[in-house]
Length: 286
Image 1: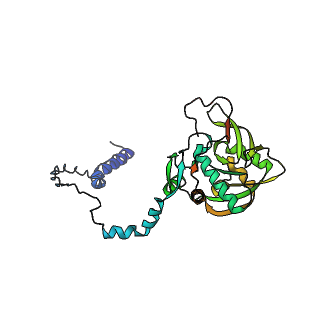
Image 2: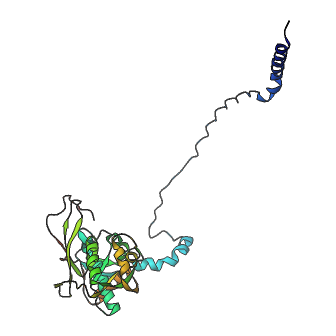
Image 3: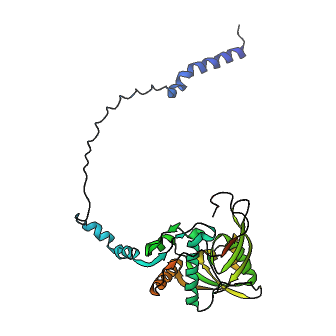
C-alpha cells in the first residue's frame, strides 16, 4: 500500500507531465525558410563613348560662363607679371633658404616704410612657405599666392634686449631678416643655436643691449601661440597691426622694386653661419 506522501508526489509528477503540452504550445519550432531561388543575372547596360575635340573653336557653355564670371577678373590678375626674378629662389637650407630670405627681407622693408622707423628683425615660420622653389625669370602674382596662401597679417611689437636674445635662439630654424646667427648641427641633424647678433643696414654686426627696447616684425599666427618656443612673444609690448597680409606685403615689395627698375634677387648671405660639420644625412630636417 502506497503511503500518503508518495501518493502526493506521484500526483504532482503526473500533473507536470500532463501540463507539458499546454505550456509548450508557444515554443513551436518554426521551419527554416526555403533557400531563395538564384537571382537571374541582368544584362549589362550597353555603353558608348566617343572623342570630342575641345579647343578654341568650341563654343562657350552659357551656364558655365555665368558661374565663373564673378571670378574671371581675379583669376586673370593672378597671371599678371609683377616683376622679374634674377636667380631662382629655393627653400633648401637653414632659415628657408633664399625663399625665406626673400620673404623676410621684403616684409621688413615694407614694415619699415609703413611704420616710419627701423625694424631690427623680421621673422616668420618656415611652415608658412608653401612653395619649395620659384624659377628665375618672370615673377607672377600666382607665384606669390602659391608661396604664401594663408591670410597671415603683419604685426610689429616691442621687446626688450633680453627677450630679443631669446627670440634669436628660437628663430634659428625659421626665416629671419636682421640678424646673424651662428649654429651647429646636433646629433639629430637639426640646427642648434650658438650665438646671435643684430646686423645694421651696412651689414655690420652689433651686440644686443639687454636694457634697450627693440621693434620687431612678425605675423599674427606666431603672436597667437601661447605654448611652445614662440610663447616668448606673449611678453612683447605695444602690438601694432600693419593692416596688411604677409602675402600683400611681399607683392607690394616686388611691385616697388619693379617700378624702380630693379629685378628681385635671391639673396644667400651670412645671416645663418654654420659652425662645424654639416648634417650626417644628405638632407637635414627643416
